[in-house]
Amino acid sequence: MTNASATANTAGTPAAERLRVAVIDDHPLFREGVAATLGADRSMEVVGQGATADEAIQIAQDLLPDVLLLDISLPGGGIEAMREIARLCPYIKVVILTASENEKHVSDALEAGARGYVLKGVGAQELMRTIHAVHQGESYVTPQLAARLLTMMKAPPQHAPPAEAD
Image 1 (cartoon, rainbow, N blue to C red):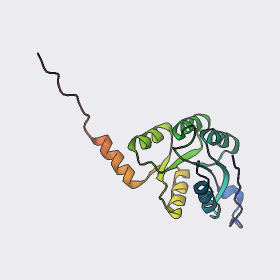
Image 2 (tube, helix red, strand yellow; image 1 turned 135 degrees about the vertical axis):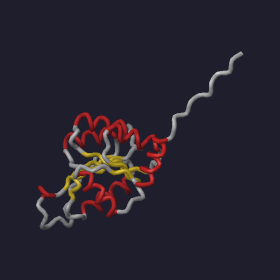
Image 3 (tube, one colour; image 1 turned 90 degrees about the vertical axis):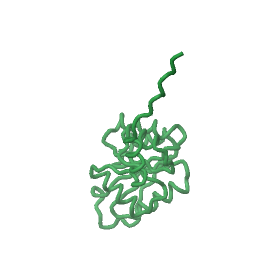
Image 4 (cartoon, helix red, strand yellow; image 1 turned 45 degrees about the vertical axis):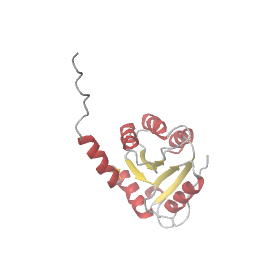
């Protein structure tokens, strides 16, 4: 587990006013890039990084970030980590940051307590806006996934055809 405090570009912003963010992803280059991007913003402080579900839960408990970015495809399972974080630390707002466009993953994550679901192709500015919005109590799902999820929810249930009489 890597605990990293961002110090870049935070001059003039009191620590108490910066959002405390943790980044959990099993791909070091991606995780470190997201952490560096967020840490360069004056409104955020990256307080921790991790690569597994167990590390996500430990970081949530030990560091109490305001927002935790969590990948679904982690060793130990991101959805399972989401459920445990929601149970242990319900005040931490979790945003799923993943490559998965699977509607079941979206619904499972939201049911487990995630406040946001963002695809890894997101730009830095949009990710920062999403983190701020979620921290302020809003929910966010990447628009194209939200539309597919709503369509799926509105679809009439599939019934089995009636059994033929002999």
